[in-house]
Image (tube, rainbow, N blue to C red; front, side, top):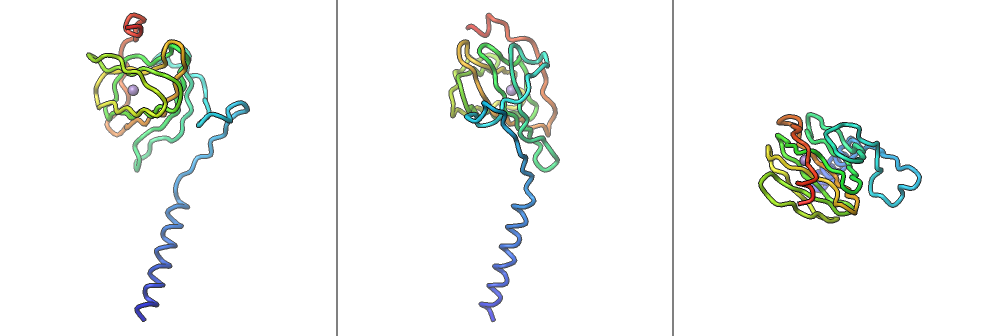
Length: 162
Ligand code: MN
């Protein structure tokens, strides 16, 4: 009797597992021709003036009430970068290709390579972008539950080159 109960409990457990996998929101992201070797597609060129130089964005996941984090793949051409900015809920950057820079206000610029992970603390002004001769690809995980990104001043060539 108890063995039968275990089998039934096991079956219900399996059904619950299948259901939860089936209900995950999976987005099909299509790569263009020539993008086969990229982890994610390059996406569209960003036209916002919060970025300096040529930058592309592919949204991977939008924030919702359960996971209030936006996930995007951002590709910076050499010397392209964000303006100074801050995230009220912080941000995590996963470097997936190229060579880039990350700098927090009052700190020196950090060099970033493929495989590096950066945690931008909430409300700390910073910028990120490509190195002067290599492109830079990051997956940005931005927590939006405490508010939207606040954009600040340009990253001047003097600051960028330092
Ligand atoms: Mn940031």
